Length: 190
Image 1 (cartoon, helix red, strand yellow):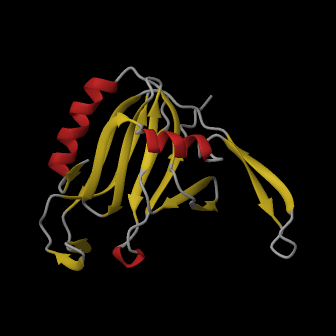
Image 2 (cartoon, rainbow, N blue to C red):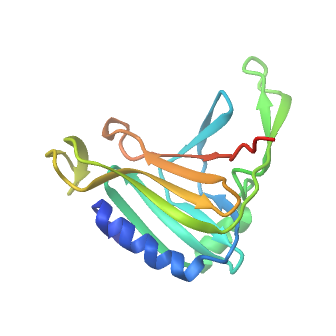
């Protein structure tokens, strides 16, 4: 896995990656562990403390470990045999296209369900949102404060050819290594 610590390196990595994947459509987005989600207004925000996988039609994945501000682990590869075995056992193989069961908090019985439907396309642009103010982060297994003026980043948007986006942002350091991710859907005006 390659690790990126500043916006300039992240931009360079994604520009190189886009040349390789520009016409390959995304098929699904998943993790190999359980995660939680919160529904807000018109979007659902998921969070995970493990790698996030964006699988493409060629069966290769963009594997992302982005659990801290301005610290991104990323690689583009096929799933390992162990990951493939785990993938075949998970229930939710695509977080943005699934039916979720909703349980009654008193009886723990299924009381309803809702469904999520998101249309994928190929990734045409990756926007790395930069900032330069002071912030706290984890480095070398301890919490440190990085000074203002750096070439930092705190959100990444994968922009798709159909106008939709897959967005991600690590939680603040006090949450100790969690990634929020969600989709934004292009609304067409008639």
